[in-house]
Length: 252
Figure 1: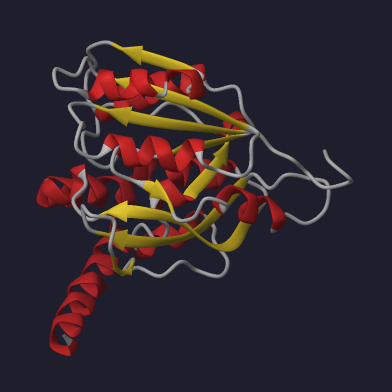
Figure 2: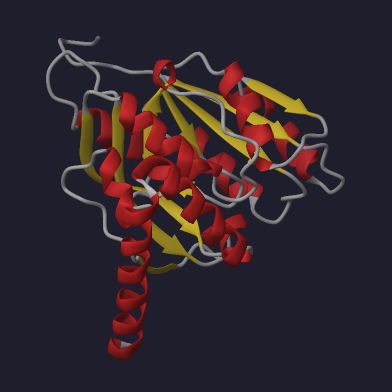
């Protein structure tokens, strides 16, 4: 608390593997934040390229680094969760960056009162590998969010979704591509207060893991939705998704 205003600590976790081409921009976007109550954790999967050399360049600005083989992205993210000591978890994977140097400061300034919301969320900009803005994320962030909102798809990008550390569970490793979808729904079910910051939080690199494995990801999301929302509701929503996609193509 500073002058009656909350000053939460953010645990920022970057998971990386052979990401020498994109990691440095991510690290710089974290260490250049004007808000300093930040814990930075990098979990590397025993990279064989220059990833560790890049991390070593900034080692004094990174709180924790581990580099060891893992069982995939979500296993590595679970390692990050187990190391986090902050109020909020923020996953900023290699290639993703905060939108501005004062993004975290902007987010904190939107928090009203003395109580920290259980979840903070905001907007996502899609960028190319050069960091050039392409467009805002296609699924628009809802003004008010709750656990049922994701019936319509993942309306908030995982990187722009900050959950309290005390609220979350480890990622379910039976999902290879969409464990974050399940994780966010679980966190929202437990949350009492979800706060829309109205801040553009993340510059998200267009080609992520899920983008590259789109079909497998969609199949997993269907099963996750059926688990949380019921099979009938999920089928009905997927019929709507098809209609929405066709309508979107016609407009384009």
